[in-house]
Each structure stands twice: as C-alpha cells, then as structure tokens.
Length: 355
Ligand SMILES: *Cc1c(COP(=O)(O)O)cnc(C)c1O
Image (cartoon, rainbow, N blue to C red; front, side):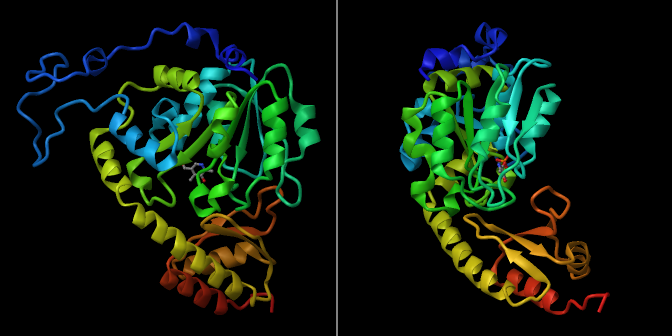
C-alpha cells in the first residue's frame, strides 16, 4: 500500500476533525509569565508542584524513545498504556455498526473489548494448533469492511512469536491496517521486532509498552510506531493531556536506566529455563509450551484443581483452561527465583483428590 491509500482508510469525520487546541498547544515556546491556561500560580498542596499542564506531545520522552528504538520522533505516538492506543486506532479507522476487525484468538482480550465498545464487528480466526495464523482462513474472512487485523507477537497467552512470513503476507496483500502488538518483544530476540521494517509498510502500526520488561505498569505508558501521517491523526484523536506530568517525569528518569531493562530480561530468561525444567517433572502437567515472553502456558490434567490449590498457597496464576485452543491451561508469569520456588513447592504438595 502507499500512504495515500492508507489515509483513505481513515474515517472521514476524523480526517476532517478540527482537534481541540490547548493552551500549551497554541504556545509552546519560552516565557516567564504564563497567564494562558487558568492554572493556579501558587503551586500545589505538595512538596512537588503539579500546577502546570504537562507537555501534550511528550517531546522529551519521544526524543529518548527515538534514541533507544532508533525510530524518528515523527513516527512515535505515546499513549496512556497500549489500551488507550488500541482504542484510538479502532476509533480512527472503523465506522461503528459498519466496519470490522479481525483478531486471532487465543489472544489479548482488549482488541475485542475496544471494538465492542465502538460497535465494530469482530471476526475471529482461531490460530492453528501451533499457535500460528491460518492465512487462508484470514483471507476468507476479509470483507470490504475489514479495516484492521491484529497480530500479537509474542502472543498473549501462548507466549510464542508469530511467523514473520505470515505477517509479511498480510502486510503486502491486505488493503487495510496491520497492528502488531509487541508488548513482550523486549524478552524476545531483538531481530524479531517489526520495528526494523517500519519504514517499508505505511499500513503497519507497531505497539509496545513500558508495562512489562521495563517494569512500569503503574505509570501507564504505551507506544505506537507508524507512518508520520498516521501518528499525526492519532495525536488529533487522543485526549489533549493524555500523559500526566508525574508519569512523564518518572518515565524520562527510567529510560535513562537501560541497565535495569537488560538485567530484568537476563534474570527472566534464566528463571524461565529453570522453571521449564522443574515443571517437566510433574506427572499432572501434560504440556509446557515454549515461550518468548515472561510467562509460560502450561497444560494440566486438572487445571481447576491446581488453580484452587495454588490459591490456598496464596499464589495466583491466570486460569485460561476454558479458552479455545488453551484447554486445560494455566498461564504462569515467571516470577523471581524465590517466587518460582514457592510455586514449585506448592505444586509438589499437590495430591489429587481423585487418587
Ligand atoms: C500487558 C499487555 C499489554 C500492555 O498494555 P498496557 O496498557 O500498555 O499496560 C498490551 N498488549 C498485550 C498483548 C499485553 O499482554
């Protein structure tokens, strides 16, 4: 696709939208006296002041992200978690009660919820048994109203990367938007990120987040990487001040500590290997799926019993046993060495009630 065709996919009311123009948008230069935004000039009832509105376009954060990700600033959008970003993408391309998206379950739940909220039809094309896209089924489900196809790689809750050739096939043959959610990409080999190919595909939007490997879920910061014309429209649709001052400040501080990220990834990979080997020894575990993320999908003979047993030990995992293609599975986040040991101890103490 070429970018003019991509722009034609955007809803006409969004293309024609005149965005809200905030005070900090109309004047972003240097001044000594700010009397333009009705802020309280006496500061805040705190030791640190938050009386001023934050930068609506988060330029300092984008500069830093641009260095880290090696992507130009005009290809970066910053949102209130990936969840805001998913919502904006659906709202800018899909006309309610008319357009459709395709998702590939089992996958992250927010694509469907965001679509449902906006009355967008969701076509589901279930992944194959090895959790890869079924290309011919996807193509059969593409209609003239299909605007977006969502991939998640590494996929949640299965943990695997999606085959690049499958994504490439859709990117090159589908006349719509391809979203690749890379929430867990920091845990995967760096060559597996689609960021390396961003400039080749104007219909590609890549989502990443600081919520996982960066350890900043509580600050709520997600990123989208796309063609500058798409980013420009996303900025028009977002809330004027979508990232608050405290988050902007703390994120900037955190992004200077890339060592923390690298250490976390290394520890996760060590613990993943240990946990994988240890889980193999349980007779009631029928399958441990390989993972490129910070969680493992594990199939049990008796998932609900195990789930409750772990709860008795005050250990919570995610019960995915009723999800199609994940029958019998619990999704277990890889914890610290101590946490994983507690999990293994609890599993060792399990005596099936049917024995
Ligand atoms: C955890 C997760 C996210 C993160 O969402 P945030 O809103 O950025 O915290 C996004 N996508 C997937 C697939 C996830 O598992």
